[in-house]
Length: 252
Image 1 (cartoon, one colour):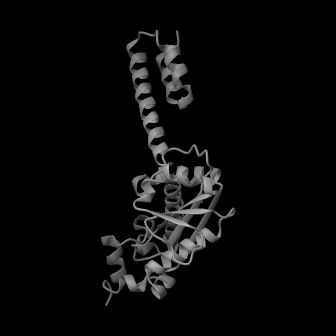
Image 2 (cartoon, rainbow, N blue to C red):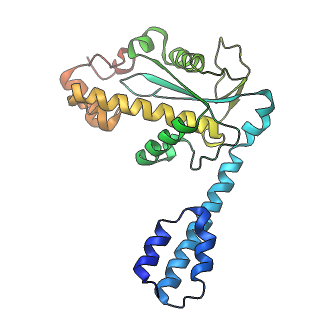
Image 3 (cartoon, helix red, strand yellow):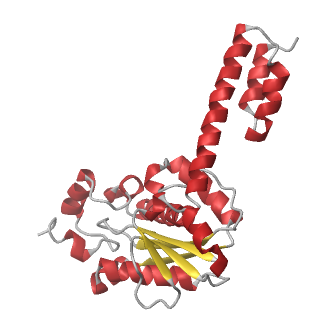
C-alpha cells in the first residue's frame, strides 16, 4: 500500500486535469489521512472551477467584439505617484486564451503579478508598452501624459488591433474604435492583462531607480507618497525622477 506521504506529494503536484484520476485512484482508501487529502483536493477542484467561471465571465467583452478582428486591452499605472513615469500596457490575447487568475493588478500579490507577467508575455498575440517621463508629465499634465503613453503602447502592437477595450477612458487622437469600460481591469481579461504588464514594468523600473537613489525608498513605495518618502523628499530635496507639479506642496 502506498504511503500517505507519497500520496500527499502526488496530490500537491497534481494539475487540474489530473484531479478526477486521483479521486478515482484513492476513493477506496479508508485511511483518515488519505480521506483528508482527498477533501483538500476536492476544495482545490472547487476553487479551480470557480476560477474557470470567473475567467469566462471576464471574456464577455472579448467575445462581444472578436468578430471585428484583434481585440486589445489597454490600462495604465502610475497616475498618482510623486515620482517615476506613468506606464501604459496594451495587450492582444489569443481568442482561445486559457490564462487563469487575470485580474486588476491591484488585487494580485507581487509574486502572482510576476508569474502572470511571464505567462502573458509568452502567450499574448502582441504586447505594447508606452510611457511618459516625469518631465513630460510636468509639461502636459498627468492626464495628457497618460493618453500619450497609451497611444505609444497601441502604436507598438503588431498586428494592429481592430478594437480597443479601455479601462474607463476614451483616448484622444486614436482612429481605432474604442470601448471605455468602467472598472475594466476587473471585467475584461485583456484589460487585466494590460494592467499586470504595465504594473510589473513600472514596479521593476522603480526598483532599478532605488539602486541609484536609495534614500527615497522607491523599491518599496514605487514613487507613491508614503510618509517615509515624503520625509526623504523634505530632507534630500527632489530627485531627477520626481514630478515637480506633484511635490510642490511637500517642499518649500
